[in-house]
Image (cartoon, rainbow, N blue to C red):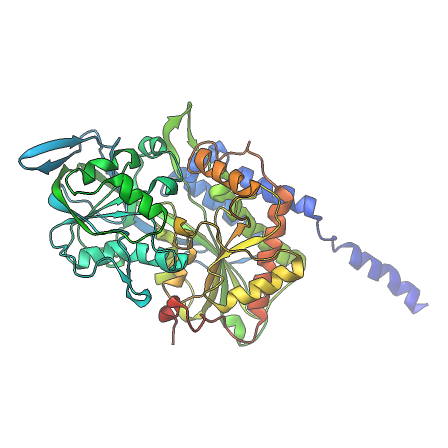
Length: 529
C-alpha cells in the first residue's frame, strides 16, 4: 500500500522536470537570440554605443534566466576603457614623392588610413621600402626583416607567405609585425593585398572608412607605445608604389599569390601625408558568467567559451542600407554560447572544472575586449585552461565536417577529432590558411597568454560548392548590411555545431589533465610553466 501511495508523488515529481527540447526547438531558440541581437534596435552593436549596451543587457538577462552566476568585475560586467579614433579622410592627404615631384594619392579611394591599434602621427614624410611578406619567423628559416634598414621608413608589405610555413605561424607573425617594425625604427606600415587574396570589394572598405578605430585608453596595454602610421593600399592602385623600383606590382602580386619568394626593394619614393584625426573616450563591458564545477579541487579551474558581442554599428549606406546588423558576425556566436549554457543546465550537467562564458567587446576594433580579459581576467589567470571560440562559424550550408582552427597546435585538436569521430563530423583543415583566420578572432588573445585554444567553422574544402557559397558570402555579406536576418541559414545544423563544441568543452572540463601545446608547436613558447 505504501508503494501505491508513493507512486503518485514520484510521478508528480517527474512531471515537474520537462523533457529536453528537440533540436528543432533549440534551433528556434538559438535563432531567437540571433534575431534579438541583430535587430535594428541594437543599431549594429558598435562598441561604446547605447545599442551595444542594450545587447549586453540582453545577454545578461538570458544568463540570469539560464541560472549562471555573475563572474565579471561588476556583476556580469567587466568594463573596458578605450580611446576612439576617427580619421578625417576628407581633410587628410597623401602623395608619393620622388625627384622633387609629388604624385597625389587619393584618400581613401587609393589609401585608407588605419584607425585602430594606436594614435596616428599628424604628419609622415618618409622613404618607402618593400619588405616582401613582412614576416619575421626565424624558427622557420624565414625573416623578411633581416638586414633591412627600417629606421625612419615606412615598410610596405603584401599578403601571403611561404607555402611551407603553417597558416597559424604566418598569422601570428602578421599580428606581431607592427610591434616589431616600430621596435626597429620604422614609423609606418602600408599593407597590400595580392589579387587572388582579395576577400571583400575595396569599395566596401572605402564606404567604411568613416568608421572609428579604437585602442586601449591605458597606454600600458598597447602593443605599440608611440604614434605609428598604418594604412592599406588598393590592389588596383598598388602599381603606383612600384613605378620606380624596377619591378612591377603585377609581378610581385603574382609571386605572392603563388606563395613564392619575394624580393626586398627600395621603392625609390617617399610617402608624404598629413593625417587629421579626432578622438573620444568610450567604455564598453565584456560580459562574463560562470557555471561552477563539481570537483572540490578542479572547480577552481576554468574552461572558457568565448564569442564577440560587438559589430560595426551604423555607417555609410550600401544600396540604401547603413545598418550593419551582424547576424552571423557575430550574433550567431553569442547565441551559440547561450544555447550551450542552456543545454548544460537542461541536462543538469556540472563538469568537474568550472565553465566560463565570456562575451567580449571590441573584437571588430582589434580583438581588444578579449585582449583586455586575457591580460586582466576576472578570475585567476592561471585558472584558465582552454578557450573555445565562436566567430562567424557560417551555418550557410549543411554541416558535414568541422574546421577547428589551431587543432594541430595542441591536445585540444586530438580531443576535437575524437568528438568529431563520435558525432560523424570529421575535422578538416583550414582551406584558406593565408586569410589569417587563426589570429583574426578572440582565441588569439588567449593564445598569447599561453592558453590552448580553438575556433570553429562549418567545414568545407577548396573547389567544392560549399567553398563557392562561403566565398560569395564573404564578398557580398561580410561586414556589409546584408549580414542580416533575411539571409539563408542552416539553423538546425548550427545547433549541431553547438553540440559538437559543448561535448568538446565537457570532455576538457572533466579530463584529469589540462590541455597542452604540442611539443613542436610554435605557440608552446607562451605556455605557463
